[in-house]
Image (cartoon, rainbow, N blue to C red):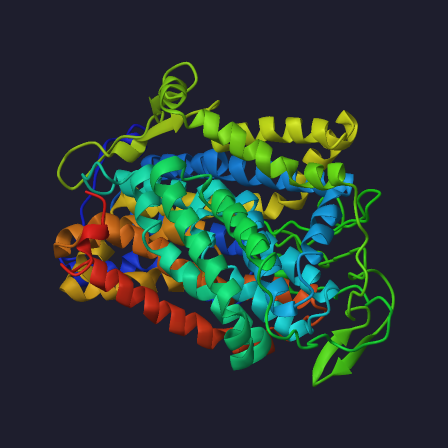
Length: 626
């Protein structure tokens, strides 16, 4: 028994003293995960568990890690997967669900419809600005599931709505769910190499010097998708204003305000700028781009592969009086479950009954016709609809004030302790810092979200019983996603603490300076397969910084590149494609949507690779935090 838990020191070349031969075995867990998700199309939670099992076998049989240490390493990773990662996601989605329960999500949607009748501008407001707000709050597929339904309610054709929602869900992803991917990246990289800059704040700042440049381009791409060259020519001012203000907001918030608040601030600033611009400027013409279909409601989307998503995608638009059934506090899409993906909506949005029609070769759900009149809500109700986001900003801003942040980082609010029984040394003979677990129970973003949820329930006048039931439903809906995230983080910890990641890092380091171009592609592959920037950062974060150190590159730059490049894989991940296809009633037609977006994904990826490469040279290396 004592042998199972004896101290372990990492060795990067356990197979015949060869890094190349050792890398063959070190890559098995990742290859297993990618094959099971991308080829076998196994459910994410099961693929994560199987891959974790493979990692444990390789750690014990090949790397000679004591079985007890390997299991303890997995347990620490699983614990980190729940706290703080899932703790953020669950409570953030609960806050969103409260807006559905009260009917204020519909109020919010209607307030956006009134801003402009031009569908090209609506794509920017709904998919880009509001989608970023949803990404900031919940992430994990929620923005796609919700905005695609809103776009169809505004009259967008199914394929176009899906493409717009997927492409828009790029620039905000790195800071999704209150910067969960960045938090994960900071944790898995901080103990991988000895660089004090590898923390949430610095990595968030570096990503904030990459994705904002991408954000400037995305709205222009959206109007091109909606209306081609004419759309760009006639609406470029509003697209440019939306992208520039979002990018500036992301940069300022991530570098000088709060990393978790980055997307919330950027989304609200961008939306406000668009609204102000539209008060003094309108496009020269607003062509009718609506899908033409009889006024009826579409059938409920059929069951699809969305249940294979690696993260929660709880969403829905319940009727104003309260939630509809079958989803998170109403109808919605839960990528962590295997049941049908249902989406209900008011005011011309999808609801039960009716049949789809054929328009221009696309299946157009009846009811996706032009919204000719939008109900006006009382100003006080509109204010309440936006109140949850304002509450979150205030709470997080207070928690991130210098004196408050420092106080909350101390005991008893934050406790740091060695993971019981885990005793792992790095290749240099020094204890790994990752064996220490940080339990910041009060300053954790998830805890702050609970406080925001309580205040939201009071402002929206939701009874305590309804709020508690919505909270319980959130856990039920995300049960498989919870297992998925915990399994993936357990896998990442075993890979890192057994030395498998270090072996791959030494192998990739042989690419030298060329790796600075490839680093974004590695993140893109990770997100494309797992559907999650968080999962990609957990799997490849340590690999990126170890490779950077061995190749003489900047570890902060490459770690950030993993997350920034990863966001561009989101639109082509099977999980997100399944969510979009289900929401537009085109289950089984994911390939059609894929063909609409894959070109944009590749073009933007090359753009990001070039940017990161330049940031690794004297041309733009001044952009990297020192």
